Image (spheres, rainbow, N blue to C red):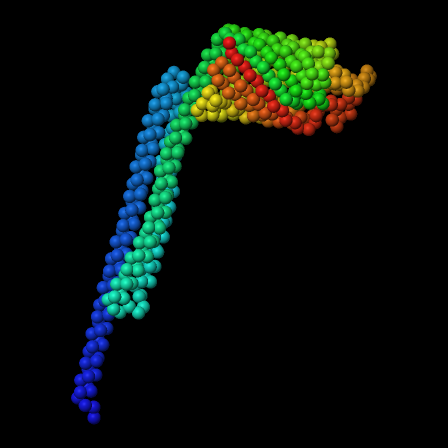
Amino acid sequence: MVSRCAIAFALLTVMTLGASARQADARRDAFGAALRAQSDTLVAAQHAYVDTLIRHGSAATAGALHTLQTCVDSLVRAAGDSLDADARANIRFTELGMRTTIGVMGYPVRGQLQSLLGAFDRQIAVLLGTTLVCPGCSSKEQFDHARDEFAEAADSIARTSGDSMATLVEAWEDALDDSVVAFTDSVLAQIDGMKEEAAEDRESHTSRLELSGTYQAHASYRGRDNGIAESAFGPSVTYHHRSGFFAGGALGWTSQPTPGPDDGDLTAGYEFDLSSRLDGVLSYTHYWYSDSSTKPQAVTNQSLAGMFTFDADAVTLLADLSYDFGGGSGAAEFTASLDVSHDILVPGRTLGGTLLLSPTVSATWGDQDERLLAKRLARAKKKVVVVKSVKPASIFGIMAYEFSFPARLHVGRFAFEPEFDYVVPANVLGTGKSLLNKDPSSTNPFASATFVVTVTV
């Protein structure tokens, strides 16, 4: 028989265990509720932080748009009459494009912020689910310790995510500032370029005297060097009348075959404008060459030339036509070249002046007459085959391609013009042909450099 004491003890034990279990369940419920509340508060705070960041970015965008408009308005007003209606319309059109660009800069940032926010929500949810399990937790101290660990881990996740979000918005704001500065700089450079063009246009319509000095490291003509790598130097003087007529003369020295005076010329011509975008130059030149000159153009002594320049905004097109004749051979050579260049005005002042870069691609076509080739060979002291029963060959075609990088630094009355050229000859007369004589000019590409200094009086 089980004693009454044993039964009472068993009942007391069961009641005690039941009470302990209910207390543990109550603690777990309270623990879970506290964790969820803490998680909800943290998530809500992070969402609010993202909203704040987006508002800051939007305010920065509005500020950038206001600054852009203020700066452009100021620059256009300061430019005054140097900007015509087309130039003002072009600046306003590009400003509209920049405003659109600035306005949409925040879209990808907003998307990245939402992505980071979603990743944060998922991390907190995973942390919450892991902590709620809390295996082995029963006492108040154990639940409090687990809650503290959750808070510490959740705060760390929030800080890391928040730092990444703040970095995105800072980069957004920096990009806004950089865009405004870059655009206003480009507008300023554009206005400076127009002022420079206006000044040059005024100068071109006033009477003036220009004194120049030119150095060429590897002299060539229509992609031909007569097989001699000679350098050339020469001064020149040109008077431009405000009516458009001009006249001038030049002298030249070369390094090959005997260093010394080589040539001289007198030129007269007329400069004119056909429209605001198209201008031209017509000229006549008479040359004199020394008996020892080996320059390819030394076989003629007169030239008629026409040059036409068209400003197509993005690029400038230049067509140069010339007809070289005289010299007693009875032959003549026609030459046509086309240059395509893009002007880049360097913002601000460079060495106290304005710097213009004009990378250029050129192609040259021309006549090649074997009678003139024979004269060139004789001047270069090369062997010449003369067979009168054979009709001299004369062909017309592409003669050279040229890639050049000219620069123009204008400082007061002085202009400094360095230029680097890479010449690719083509169709050198006699190459692969059954001609009696072969042009000794280089058939391989060669580089050259030119430097011109001009002072306007």
